[in-house]
Length: 138
Image (cartoon, rainbow, N blue to C red; front, side):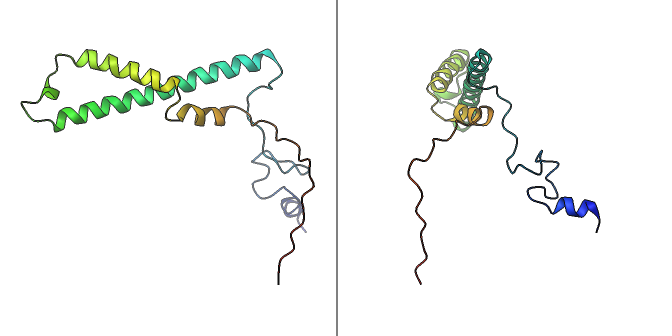
């Protein structure tokens, strides 16, 4: 039998096992690249990641508000106050301030979703009570 076929059929090492970074004794995927929580670099990484995630959420909300205002201008009638471009700069600044405030409150959850991807998962708490085996009813 070909040795390549036997290594592909053993344990966690499947056809894509080597490409996923799995070794024969492990069945878990590699962890995130974030540093461990114990060192000061971890706190700096977490702070920078949080700031970047909030800024991205602010950008996303600001862009959404800008598109909404643009759609309102397009749909408005010719004599509508929404067609007036006199205060458009001030409205853009106000939209950006609203976007920043909403992002700081994490209103949309975009920053939280980004942080879940960037930060390593918290260790699972230990199970104190033994699990009971459930037998199927026949």
